[in-house]
Picture (cartoon, rainbow, N blue to C red):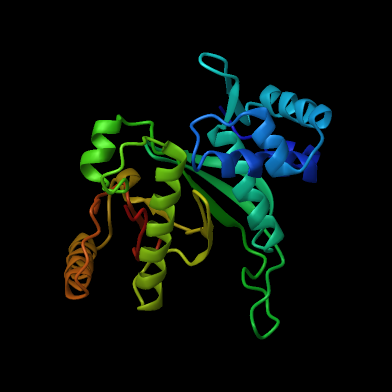
Length: 257
């Protein structure tokens, strides 16, 4: 499923009320029945069916009729819920394009919104921002369970819940590092399984074939690992895929599992 940036223009408040109702119902149910959706969304049944069919058409929800009729959010529906929150908070105005697909995330460049700081100045300074949506579940559950202890002993394998916890942890990690002067993207906001951050004007190190000062870059990378350790932290995935380098050979660390 591919996020359609234009669809959010055509989703009404009632569409989002139904999506939120399903999200709430999934806290205790794998699939949420129509009567429960209707109750949580406070929408008449005839309208609820119409809205659900529209959401089904655009793959925002999934339907099962095995043991009983019920609905669950897809990553697409979860994307729109997070995206709407970012737009309402002024961080994002429009999704422009997708720039990355990973094992556990999708990355989008967005036109920044009009979020102001406490001094009335633009937080984003008119520059584009990035949304990273977590996509846990692309790798096997066994791999996630072994390497990412988000379930804390729970047996429910809810990928949306796990992706939300992963994003909140990553945002907290990035914010702590950024506030202490580490070279990370600027973290702006987090909601559900999404993180809004600054766009790094640099290249993934995996794509760089030659450096002007390789020894200097190497020493800088070792310094960063040591600085992490001095704060009692381990990056967990410190490699050429998660390091960005610009034309001045300055390094930025991304992707904090």
